[in-house]
Length: 438
Image 1: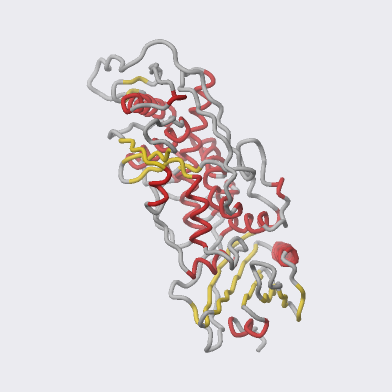
Image 2: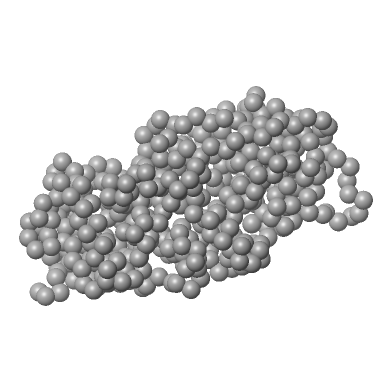
């Protein structure tokens, strides 16, 4: 899947290439029976095609552009497409009405993302993620075909970057171990970072060749969207597309494309290993558990707990003004998810609780050093202060009703562990999770 960057948070501009001149149509087939790298469906990687991308491509033009792009990806990636790849075009309205990418969210998710201070009580995680995905997805690969999401499906302005990106996913599905089931959000983002990182890395190499040696279709200019969306959740969602290529580039420097291929068999364990490639594969996350010390009135959801990870915690502090907004941009193309507040992350666990209509959670984090834990706790208290919190007891704070995070919080550090307990009222905090000294 490829996300397009949105307004202020990320304007990912891909420069267009010179439109082709010269011959059109399929080239002569190879002189031998084999299908060599750089040849697909009648097109060599250096073939020219006559497509005016500015007024949209018809079906035959889209097929020509796709075939040549496949041949070029083979040259860059060193892997052969074994099957043809179909391309379907749907309108953005169809994409949204069809449920987008099909992820469902419930009250458990609301508590998890409230714990991250990214989704407040005035909305739901489903609504917030829907706003992010509904307008930012430009294409995805599923079921053996590429689906391009277009504003006008009858006149597709071919987005070179999206097409190349999704074709890389098709190649991954044919040649590599595409994806791995992970139980945690952080683990899933780590897997996705290899998959999307590979696609974006190849996309960037493709762009470099367009600028240096290949005739390429002219890139259609994009305008930034001014629609409303959750910037923090977008930042969480975008991590694999920004940090993933850096990891892939690091792996390729270590051992060529073989090292990248190997990562599809041994995915990173956490977003920490993606943000800090030098920690892959040796520095694995700590197994953080939360004992149930709730009263009889409070109970856990059936789903248990969740791990947010270093990347999501960076978004937490950035979205809430603790990390300066300008820290995010490391250069014109990539975001920087590394910050001293979160660099020492070793593991975390969020466990939501419920009591009738009331909700709460325990959020426990573990850090590499005691100093890292101190720094995180101080930053967390600064986050609460951003929402107008007042101290109401030892290690206990109350965020006022004006905030979307109107609740009571107990924030305690014990060595390298910081534990946050959230409840609707100060009196409920011990009901959600009693203190150990009680």
